[in-house]
Image (tube, rainbow, N blue to C red; front, side, top):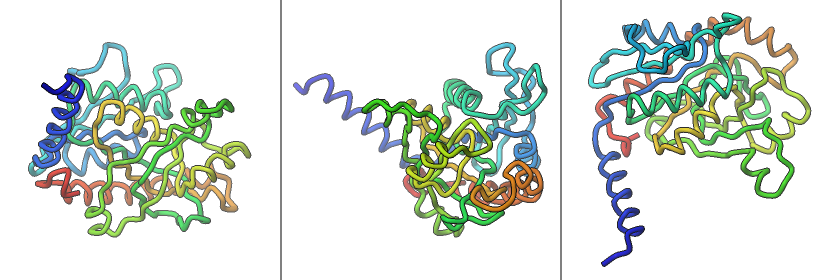
Length: 265
């Protein structure tokens, strides 16, 4: 008789194989900002759910609906209850990712949003990147092995066919809880070999990896981090136009996913 551990491992591998060959059904889209989320909500004619699946008191908003053969859930972390601004950053992203997986059991997660890009890595305003890897750049722990934990590198779900079909750029994503970039952050981002930086992706990747849910990261460039303009100014200047680009990219990805298995992506 095979040891229990081996049997369990073989069972898990068999379940993964079955999942990868079954058409994708339930998709969760996680978007940090209302300005980024609402165009997608309107595009797929999603409805806000008044009876939340989430704990009482949290500001998280769920929109849902059926599009072609997919059941789409869009989760927006909502507004901060004290300051009234979007609940951006890694804490909200990790919490809503965990809660969404527990409540909705998605076949696939899509983390979509705007991001800063690096001209040194070929990024321009309005470019859309699919992240190949996600890592943190502001968790500095200068102790052996803990330093690697701080970086927290995770591979995104590989989508070779999707990238080729939609002609999207591919690059590594670096995540931190600050919009600006300190010299320490810049050094870490360079070490992460990142093409784009955001404030949520690696947190989503950590939770999704922990709970074994395939995740795609779609990031549209609003500002050039290593450019001449101040980041905040350029971000606000381009947010509306780049959000429209992001909206289109999400639609193309959803259309590509429809009717396919994970192994076909």
